Amino acid sequence: MEKELVYVTDDDTGIRELVAEYLTSQGYAVETAGDAAALDHLLAVKTPDLVVLDWMMPGEDGLSVARRLRAQPGFPPIIMLSAKGEDIDRIIGLEVGADDYLPKPFNPRELLARIRAVLRRGAATAHAAVDVARQAGFGPYRVNLDARTLSRDGTEIPLTGGEYELLEIFVTHANRALSRDWLMDQLRGFERDPFDRSIDVRVNRLRKKIEDDPANPAYIRTQRGQGYIFLPQGKG
Image 1 (cartoon, one colour):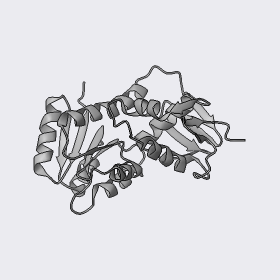
Image 2 (cartoon, rainbow, N blue to C red; image 1 turned 120 degrees about the vertical axis):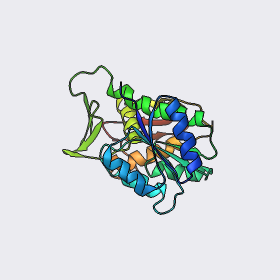
Image 3 (cartoon, rainbow, N blue to C red; image 1 turned 45 degrees about the vertical axis):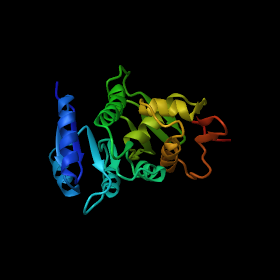
Image 4 (cartoon, rainbow, N blue to C red; image 1 turned 60 degrees about the horizontal axis):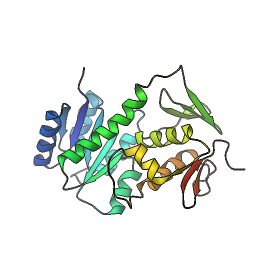
């Protein structure tokens, strides 16, 4: 079986070598890059299964790189690393398209757990036993649950891996109030801070993709004191 490929991008040589050595010992194929240009070179050769991306790099920073990758169809999931540990920094990282965020300094075992969680979510859907072309619809949108795509009137709408995972959860649990804690458990699969509200960031990102008026959503409604509810028919 071919090993899952991870690109580790960080301008700190010590961190690159440490992470690469540890992930290699855990069975991953790893390539490293010291900046955005080196990462672009790797991406031109082969698309990895996941990118570990440092926020603060010389030249083009990680946020800019994440935005570029997010705009490309089928781009790999991203785990953002940063010495910035404030909640607002994590929120910004998620808003630009990262699938997860890990502040420095970090334990390589925690990074490994997060990599496994992100890759496991994708693999679970990709390898599920499914009927031909499972699809779901709401409003003018069609969700292909096998191809993991969203389209509106025949035009595909680019989604990050995290945005698609959240949309799939909503679509397959329509008309049910879903708590923030339950949603986070489905999306992340590892321990988190009990005050973690990054699910709200993910919901807001998805709303911007599917709602005509994200501030007054028709499909993903907030349930006060509960969480969210997905209404495929839209609000009346």
